[in-house]
Structures are given as C-alpha cells and as structure tokens.
Image 1 (tube, rainbow, N blue to C red):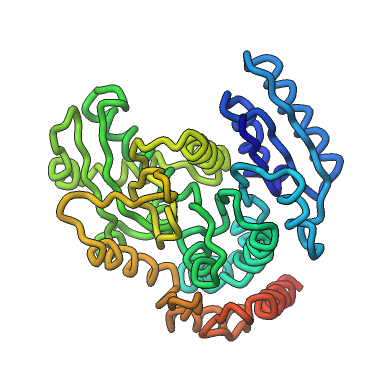
Image 2 (image 1 turned 135 degrees about the vertical axis):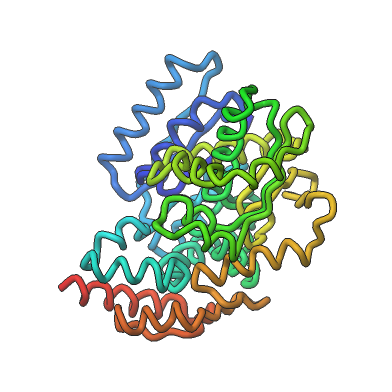
Length: 374
C-alpha cells in the first residue's frame, strides 16, 4: 500500500498527474492538494470516476483544500498524510503565463536573449517554501519537484533541501527520440535504446525558432541503438534527423510532463532498478539515465563518459539558458547576456541570486513584469 500526494493538483500539469496516477495499482491512496476548492472537487471526482471504470483494485482519493503559502501548511500536510511520494507541481507563475504577460515584441527578445534562467526567482521561491515544509515535517517522503528542475533542484540541494528528482523536459525529449528512431527503422519502440544526457535548453530548442547551428554549438549527448546496433552516426549524418525530432517534440502539452512524474513515482515505489531517463536525478543539473536504488536515484553514465564530460555538456546548455554558474551553496550567477536582456527589457537588475534573497527578488521581478504589462 502506498500514499502519493500531489500538491497543486488542480493546475494544468497537476490535473494530468492526478488522472494518470490514480490508474496505477501501486497507489492505494491519492491525496490531492490545491487552493482552488471548486476545481479541486471536480478533478477529485474525475479521478474517482476514472478509477471506478479502469481499476480492478480499490483506491482512496482524498481532496484537501490547502493554501501552500501559509506558514506551516506544507509541514502539516506531510505530517498528516505521510506520503511515500510527494509531487511538487504547484507553480505560481508558468513560462506560458509569463509569455502572455508582456508585449509580444518584448517577449520575443526576452525569450531569445534572457532565456528562462534569469526568471529563476519566480520559479524558485515556492519550491524553497515547499521543501522547507517537507524538512520541518521530518523529510522522510520522496519528493518529485517539477519547477525548472535542471536548475531549481541543484539550488535546493545546495540549501540542504534536496528533492529526489524532477520530471518532464529531457524525459520528453528522450521519448521523442525513441519514437523517431523507431519509425525510421520500422521497429517497435521497445527495440530502441536511447542513451541521452541533456538539459532543459535542449528541450526548449526543439520547439524554438533557433537554427540547427545553435544545437551544434552546445549539443546533447546521444547514443541510439536499434536491436543493440549502434545507429547514432547514421542518424546524425542525416540532415533530416534533427528537424524530424523538432517537429515531433510535444509543445505546451502538460500530459507528457505528467506521465514522466507518474513513471518516476512508480519506479520509486517499486524500488525498480531498471535504468530509465530521469530529469535531475539526485539533483543533477540535467537529464540522464539513472536507476532507483537503496540510496535513491543513482546516475548511470554511458560507457566512456566521465562525470566531468557530463558536467561539461550540461554547463554549455545551462549557459544557453542564461545561467553562468550554480555554486555549491545554491548561489546562481546569470550570464551577461541574460542579465543584460532582463535589465534592458524588463528593468530587472539581478546579476547574482543568493538563496537568502530569492523571495525578495521574486517580488521585485513580478513588479517589473506587471509594470511592463501596464
């Protein structure tokens, strides 16, 4: 028997997580937290309806209205329900909301010059509060943290608030690569093995207007095998391969971030040691292969790839996302280009973000965005 809690379960991604999670036989109690009472009630009922039709096993669905921003509420939720796995899916402001919050011409420049990294205060403020509540409650539950995990999770780890892993982004890229390769060689997807080391930037790139040359400057690591035959060189020599991947990569489809959450949850509940691609396993700064062992997620690097090689791949991509460095204590330095674009376009001046300043900086940045909106 296992209890899974989803915080932010009435949001776009949270809804999909709940609807998929309730169908998993490993989950016998699903606790859904959200501040929106009416929407939460509807989604909880939908989960119950799905379980009634699709599950042979019984499952308890528990909706709980909760303001996650009230001090002590997160800790009390953990203490009351003691989830085996908790999903942090509450994102106060999403990238898509930001995109619609400023004039299109301004946003186009922000998106390509600043990238996501300099918006970190808005994406980090709530995960810090959430993980502090988790720690106050004893820190025994395993947490999957969704908000920009390639950067947020390493910062949290530096603060002593490490979640187990993230989800989405590179996991979706891994799935897309497998599907494209399977189609190309006319084999089932189960006969395709993908070894991937990638970063949020690489996922962003897939549905951006950036030319293929941008990827050539900061590539992800890929080895592709079809029925154990290495076909990587054949694929990369074909100029149509990357465009095919870019065309197929899912854009603004929360279901696929949700399914990677559920996949990781089930692996953790079963202590499944089969290797899988995971976003930020053990708070690493990108997506890579890992297996879930007695000590949590354990990274499995491809043969011939060292830890230094892996970090070099991720560092180049992180720089493209507007982040120059993440220090051991969680302090983040933004790139000159990213900081400069934020300062010019949004009048927001923050070259270095220290953990103690996150809440203050998130409020300043939000005011800057609101001013641009008028």
